[in-house]
Length: 156
Image (cartoon, rainbow, N blue to C red; front, top):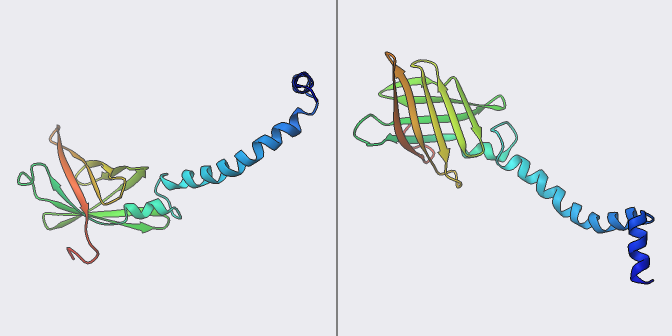
């Protein structure tokens, strides 16, 4: 078959679909499993994805500068396919209203006192840094902090 005959068949559409499918099939068999893996790898923290485990556990957090405010402990655990958490600070437990993780970005809302925590986790899941934002008497304050995963059993 001459080169002109092949290009003529492709232009006219005669036999082009089987040839295209034959070329794309090996590519699709490689790409589809990768897409399925990456969809759950860094997605929202929901039951059943392995990435949720990066946030679950106890975290020791210190404000910057460390001597300006008392440190706190964040304890995160799975609960009914979602995440629940409590903050231990200055000898009291502060319940968390909601906790959300999108990839490496963590947002924690606290009802009493009204506060928000925004952090970014390290890719290895061993630390995070961000800030604690709280409004008191009409004044908004933001305190930067860093947190490290505590070893199981530490701080109990």
